[in-house]
Length: 112
Image 1 (cartoon, rainbow, N blue to C red):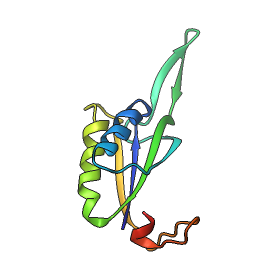
Image 2 (tube, rainbow, N blue to C red):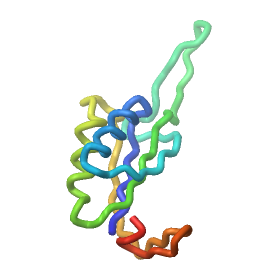
Image 3 (cartoon, rainbow, N blue to C red):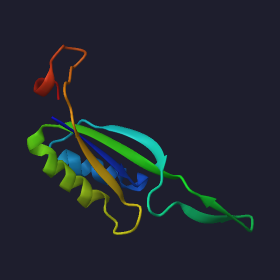
């Protein structure tokens, strides 16, 4: 089992959600986060003054899937979230040792 964490633009959440649904991945966790990468923020103007915003709003999408489905999930997220511009985001994949469904007590693959 693997956890796929994608940090994406907030306006791409619906596209990513639909792409994941199309491949049969319906369970996900969405968190509104702030962050920065290579772009190091942006400069904006307000009332004639410039100010720097170095932590930009992003969305964190988390999905847990079987190891055999990781590449399909990553490809779906990449295609749905890509704009081709700096700030499209990153995807992280890490192992999951154990899953337990609280309601039924199911464990591991049965609990996904």
